[in-house]
Amino acid sequence: MVELIKAMEADDKDTRIKIAKALRVLEDKRAIGALIKALDDEDIEVRHEVIYALSSIADERATDTFLKLLRDQDWNMRQWAALGLGNIGNARAVEPLVQALSDEEEVVRISAASALGDIGDNMAVDDLIHATEDENCHVCFTAATALGRIGDERAVGSLKRLLDDENLHVVHSAALSLRMISKDRQAGGENGCSSGKCGWPVS
Image 1 (tube, rainbow, N blue to C red):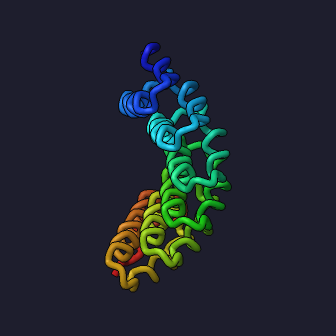
Image 2 (spheres, helix red, strand yellow):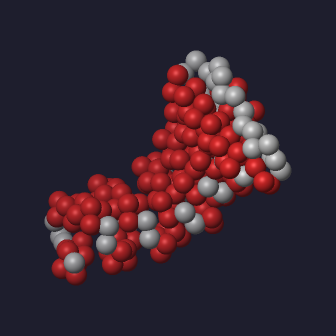
């Protein structure tokens, strides 16, 4: 592994790309320092492979780097930074990811919504509800899915409205999320639902 990590400093661009890909597959956290350093590589293809690897390894030490890259000019870097933050799951990323829900690039908004679902912090619920009204159906779908994963009842009204959406994928996501929230509430019946039948119909 030491030799593999050292090879990230190779003169040949193709070699650096191959090594970054290998490190992504191996997911060895010993490579984190070298990969973070390689984000300064002069070649954009290398930088892309490096952030893919960092996102997959998802080590806490990359959190500050990902937070910084959420503001990168390259949307590819912003996208994978968001996903990396979701994989790490640090609550410090919630507010920056919420801001990324307004990114001009739809893939970044999708990644931010997905990451917020991964983190599962209900501080993001109101912003994810707003994201279900995004003009891009993929953003709506991902935001609806994230709301189901978080399981906060505040999302129920918005998710019900999505059942009438023209996009079947959005409808399916909203229905599944409503079911997830309903099950969560039934499971917690002792906390204010003595009957154990506090779910909402999804159709």
